[in-house]
Length: 497
Image 1 (cartoon, rainbow, N blue to C red):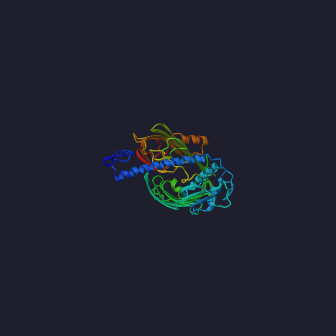
Image 2 (image 1 turned 180 degrees about the vertical axis):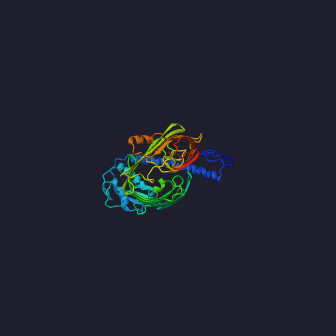
Image 3 (image 1 turned 90 degrees about the vertical axis):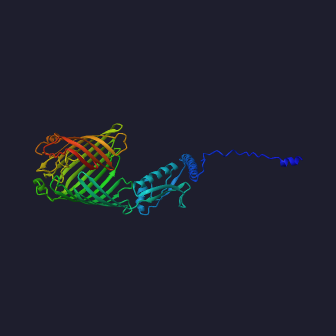
């Protein structure tokens, strides 16, 4: 009987497991396929992130604790640069070491990592590669020492050929251009570039240039350029001018700024005179040759070249003509700008320009060399190149000029990130001919006094790297010969006063 009772009595089994009727690991209650997949992906990503952070921490500890370990570079290898000459790559890499391609240098792990970083930046400055991955590997050479490694840079080269076309409309002018660029033309970071542009005022422009680095640091470059330009000046000078020239330049960058020294030879041809052209324009008609040396310097600390809120900009252009040719002169032109934020949403910009042209050898200045002033991009509320001396309606240019502009630029309410900005401006400037019958001091004083002045308001729209202005202004002070323009005016360009 006891055994019968044992087998006949019901047995209640209680497992040690907890109830699984409620989610324990934040899994969805309704286990649909899509929700379950998203939940699993989130858990996997969290796990991978944790493992990655753990590995980074361990690697940082490993590297940080062995920075003083003796380690030297056996060889530098650059892979994936099939279109680039090995000799050029050696020029880029060798300045960071004492010897040539095979380098024996006693150093530490910290030194090797620093060299790897510097070489990566140097390769990036060539602008030949869109992707550079540095690695430290065991040396391939059987003669390498125990504490030697190879620096390997796996690169992906950029496309050599690029085509670009664009159209521009502004200031009563419209143009269309096409540009062809062959990058790394001969395997040494050379750029071969050609461009063609057709417009209304600048009727056509042809340009072909070849530039190449002169040093492994890529900070000094040489450039050869040939060009042909045909400008239409009939709207303000009753003529057209064609220019054909060549230019050889060397440019470099240092801690002070950008420098360029160049030689230019330009053949100018003033042609297509209108029937009512003035005698000054008629005397300038024909062909002339200019042979000159240029020096350009630019120092720019602005946070934005289009609408800077802080920083300074200074540009100096000096030209000496007379090394052969039909004209001899010394010419200097400066441009500066300073911007500062007054408070959040409003900043002030002060810009100045000035130029001085002095003839040499007793020769008079020529129409093609003189300064022109006026228009929506410099002294606003005046027509394009309409300031200064005139001869029967033709603006003939001047030998000296200055211009200044003060602008207050703000943000739209609740839209500070928009590229559209309102501004209020006051502009002043004067263009005149240097009177050489007076003492130089008196002539310069007359060139500065009695400027033309204008004020206005408008909108600025940023098209990086240029800007479009739509302004409503009026002249406050104007000389009798100035061509002023009341009301709306549109400007479109790179540099604005």
